Length: 251
Ligand code: ATP
Image 1 (cartoon, protein in one colour):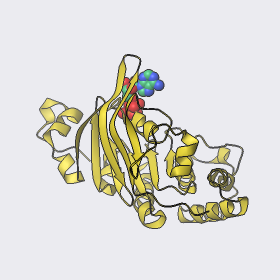
Image 2 (cartoon, helix red, strand yellow; image 1 turned 90 degrees about the vertical axis):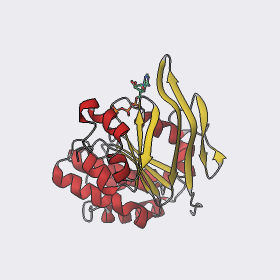
Image 3 (cartoon, helix red, strand yellow; image 1 turned 120 degrees about the vertical axis):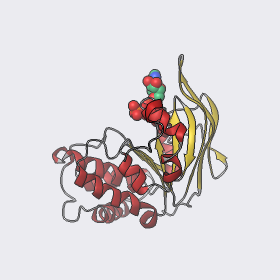
Image 4 (tube, helix red, strand yellow; image 1 turned 90 degrees about the horizontal axis):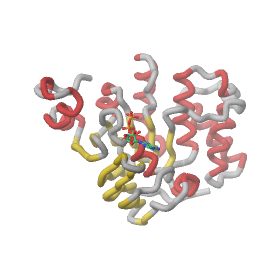
């Protein structure tokens, strides 16, 4: 199946409220094809809610999501995946009694690929991500770090125009983080998609992102290059408090 590549995934004036709680309060964000955009912010800033809205898991209370200018705010997660949005989750959510290849193939079939093509694509992604020779491993025997890598691979198996990765480095050790950075950096070149990366690990964020969008309390605080964001006094204050606002964000 060939699906046209999308160039832009945009949030326009997105609000999300859960009862009286404002998770997002009017956020504009643009993810471009081929770009790695970081999404950072303190706990509760609204990062996961933004990923949920961009992938159809949450409808905006106000505002809209556009893909190449078309309003896709009302699409289901499945339709968003078919339209070009792949995501990974904080909890890996793999089919634990299936193999890694089967997990990826199921994702590919869900986008309309035949079983044979989905399996071929699954093997190709697994080899690229460092799983050559381990395609038949069952997911209930994966280490934590491997589980997170397979979760990224499964997002890529959706053949996305945009891959949204929610805290992929969480719980990883330094060596696993370094390997992960190499994988994420390689995604746009290898798969031709844009990447939105939520991460608390500043080394990973600063190391792989071309631009970084900062949320705080459901609002956009700043967006810029890693250097710009790192030295932005408003961002430093949000992360480190007033006293530390003269220091750059520690990485
Ligand atoms: P973290 O870094 O801790 O994962 P986050 O930046 O991803 O945080 P969100 O998980 O998007 O933040 O949460 C934003 C706000 O919305 C928080 O106050 C959170 O408690 C609230 N929230 C998120 N999901 C729900 C929900 N389903 N019901 C009620 N409140 C929610």
